[in-house]
Length: 177
Image (cartoon, one colour):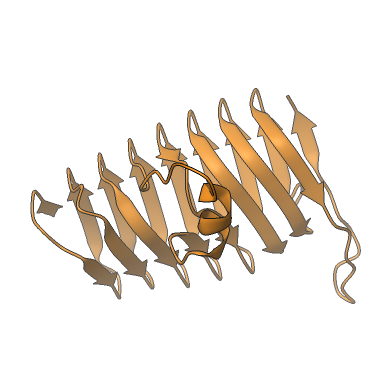
């Protein structure tokens, strides 16, 4: 358990179970497997791989204001990246800068949160409920149901691209706003 310390970089490898609480000094987390719970923290970067599972509760990413904040967010390294078969659960959090990107078969569930942007690739999936997401880009297909499921939420921009893979012939999207 990490609490009230000054860290810049945390790497989690193996079947470790890590809990981080009340850190607000912009730190980065890389989790390659294992289980992570982050409560009441300000994070700069989160990267997940393999079978990692992470829970973000009441967290935020640094807020960048002023002209060019959107461009900076899209070009910066800060944000969330989920690869492989990782699972991310976000609740009561504000990610107003940086982009959340999901690759391979990564899955994310977002509840009661504000997110700048979510980009889905390959067979990744996201469920968004009672949240505000400014930009959603779907370039994903799912053989297990929907790539994107939005319930009781709002978005400004929903961008979708159809692509076909020799082993995946379905593309699906469910939006209930």
